[in-house]
Image 1 (cartoon, one colour):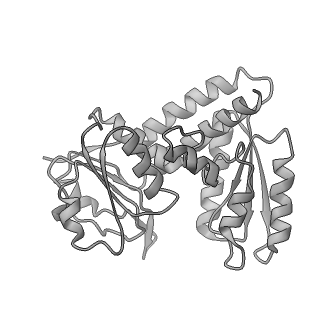
Image 2: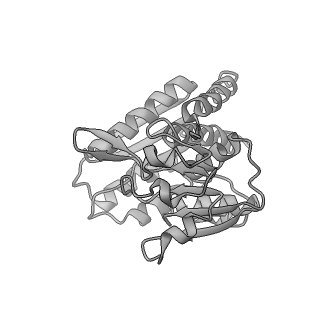
Image 3: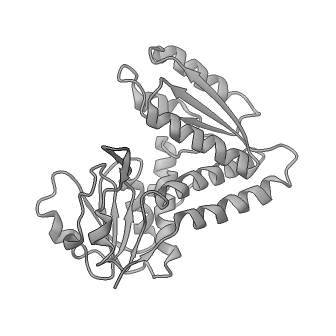
Amino acid sequence: MAATIIDGKKAAKAILDDVKAKASKLKEKPHLAIVKVGSNPASSIYVANKEKACREAGLTCTRINLSEDISEIELLEHVTAFNGDPKVHGILVQLPLPKHIDEQMIIDSVSAIKDVDGFAPINMGFVALGKPRFAPATAVGVVELIESTGIEIKGKNAVIVGRSNIVGKPAALLLLEKSATVTICHSKTKNLERFTKEADILVVAIGKANFITGSMIKDGAVVIDVGINRLPGNVIAGDVEFDTASKVAGYITPVPGGVGPMTIACLMRNVLKAQEMQRG
């Protein structure tokens, strides 16, 4: 039996519609500042999509484009300026940054109350404590897509393939808070299939096209594919081999159209939340 497709676009639209309805009642619109460094093609697409989502949700968006060879000090000055601007409610520094810049230092420099990406240590700490203020948008989107299937997360075996600070670790913490039994697998995990075959919920975020095949998936599992990989011929593929996985899984996200739209929608919701917090 073919898996049910989890429609990320539909779920994201519901979130954006809710943000738009709430923002329309505000005299001052929630304002997101985006800092983009260099001309990375993928980053340019991601930023354009975030700007589009801001417009659709009725939010204000300011973007600054900085040179690839900008110094750390100069970049910090831009972030600091947005930190101190009361008209800016959320700050997003588009990653990755050029190699000569300490990425973590820049992330740490964003005011925790404007850190709508949820990457700052204090916000990650709140996630670990089970009291998220701003959780990373992709991780939140992953959990909400799982919940959209109607399955109960409590007591399920959830396996996360990938341990990044952006997806793997926060997704594991959010699922743990919902009482799943969580296992994190990574590049040093031995006999990966032994874990993935036991997963009622499988989240894959490793950046390797078609790495997880149908033979590695438990019958009826919920499969969330976070990967976006560009193959020759401008073909986009996830980390999960969709054709074989969709014949085994109970539910599966497509790529594109799955986690990506949810990430942006959850980010917009964080901007609205940031404004609410800053208003007291």
